Length: 77
Image 1 (cartoon, rainbow, N blue to C red):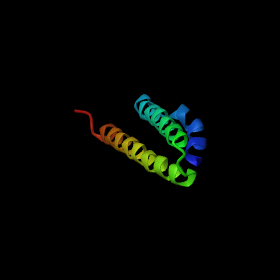
Image 2: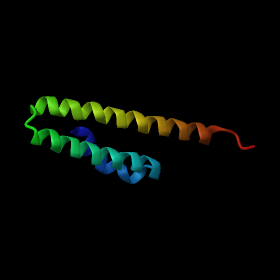
Image 3: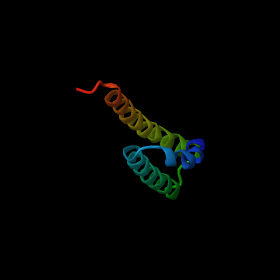
């Protein structure tokens, strides 16, 4: 929940590629949460499942940021 709260402020300062991954994450996780709630799943378990998926998206963003940093640090030819 805290990630979602903090997300709204950080969206303004990140690149388009990161915004794309974040948008996919938001869409998928919201849908997943609603689907599981509709199935009557335990809320604590539901939040854990969605949190685990969120971690996958965070990993994907980290990979993109690391690649971008490597590219920006390479000397010009």
